[in-house]
Image 1 (tube, rainbow, N blue to C red):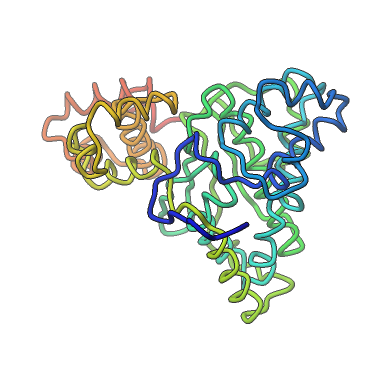
Image 2 (image 1 turned 30 degrees about the vertical axis):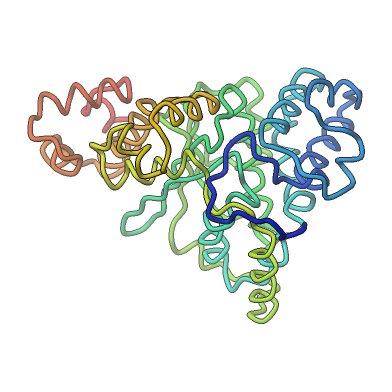
Length: 339
């Protein structure tokens, strides 16, 4: 991809064209066509043409979202998202694959994911928490996928499992949480993600023991890894997305208001509202999602009592804390600790 005219400091939005069609869109198309979907119907309404799939022509996240919606409409079976995720490792991730293959261990791969997110995972981001033994990755809708977010998360999880297997030669012990009931097609989840699955959880999340991430990569090579990282930086057009930028602000300053956030982004409050609406969200939704994540980690994972949780989340009144947790998660603090 040409690096001329790059705007590395700009924030990625759903309408920005930066994804080479030969990577992500082509991977999704190949899976859908293999499942019997007619190519002309898959491309209908997307603004994507056949030539875009075999060239460096760039597409927006919105175009790929429309392609994903058509894929779900015209393909049969329950494994399309998982097959798509696996295809990403050899298809869409092909430019990034040398970097991951030549890492020292898989922990280095995991640390690179947020740095290279807009290049290799534009639809799903993760807020990382940790305790003494484990890392917890709470998954977030990075560009406003809405109802398609489940599809994107399933693909992300399948890609992560496939990437770990390719790099280390074994399936690492990832634990996956899903905020919906146990699906009837559970065998697809078990086949593609393993058996460490929990459903009816408050949020999409991935957990793994810290020790497991020291699994060495089979083709570790510091020189080739450094060169691959240099090449990826040359390709990267955006450093971070608009939604994750605002989430980062809210994680640091929970009392931040929309006008204050707009000022930090050098735009008017009306412009920020409009851009967030284009991403199927609002400032208050992003704020509530961040606070929900914090409540889940402190109460469900760390099992803090109400006083400790309220202190962590800057509440001076326990009653207000209980009410807020119930509003954010649908559960009281005591119920959340028992999930």
